[in-house]
Amino acid sequence: MIVRETDTGILLIRQHDHGLIAGKFASHWREKPEPWCSIEQAIRYHDVGWVELDRTIRWNSEQNKPYSFMDHPLQEKLPAYRKGIDQVETHDAFAAFLCSRHYTSFFEGMDEPQAEGFLQNEKKRQERLLREMGEAARSQVDDGQRLLKLCDDLSLYVCFNPPGYHDHPWFREGFRYGEQILMPVWEGPDQLRIHPNPFEKSFSVCVPYQTIRYRDDQVKQGSFRVCLET
Image 1 (spheres, rainbow, N blue to C red):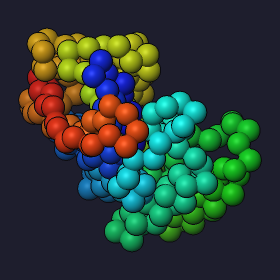
Image 2 (spheres, rainbow, N blue to C red):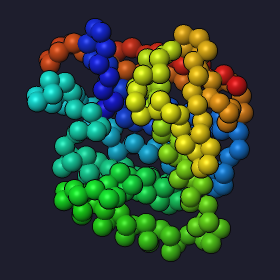
Image 3 (cartoon, helix red, strand yellow):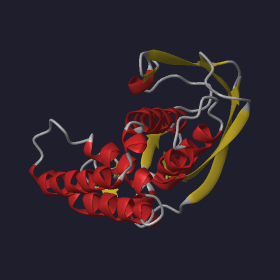
Image 4 (tube, helix red, strand yellow):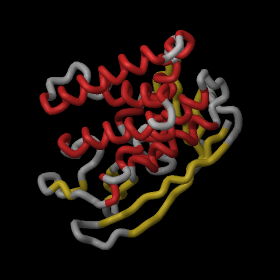
């Protein structure tokens, strides 16, 4: 769950909805790397493992707000990661490799005992999938990984920041994509431009959300739209 505090309560965005938004960014990418269908699948479904976890709002009593994807307990989060990667692999092995490497990157260099088993198992998965890939596919994983990371960040940007705002600290210096830095610029209340422009045409993304004011409050549904200009 993406959790954003507002003046009137707490806004919640489900992780898989965020992933689908990342996929929308990818679908309008101008210079599509290969194998494109696999890369787009990885981007669109990289957070599918969160579907079950996000069916209910899990409350963090210490923080007095719902758990987010950042502080959700690892003993629940790690099996969900694995289940999601398994699900992607049933459809596309290359996409599963990208998703697996995306998740293991979160824990590399961290002293996190609970994640050791997850890391070991996913490294074995990655080695197996690499062996099964052709040489051409192996040479393309880095391009796919970079685009997955970027589209993930672009989606997080529009989820974390209200339309027209550039407040979240993760993205104040823009987005790194290889040697490039892409900068977000709001040109209207809900009109966003990325410089330099990476998209083939203008499009819009719809962000569905839930809002609550306090624990056990009635959940309300809503959505907002961001228009990407080229």
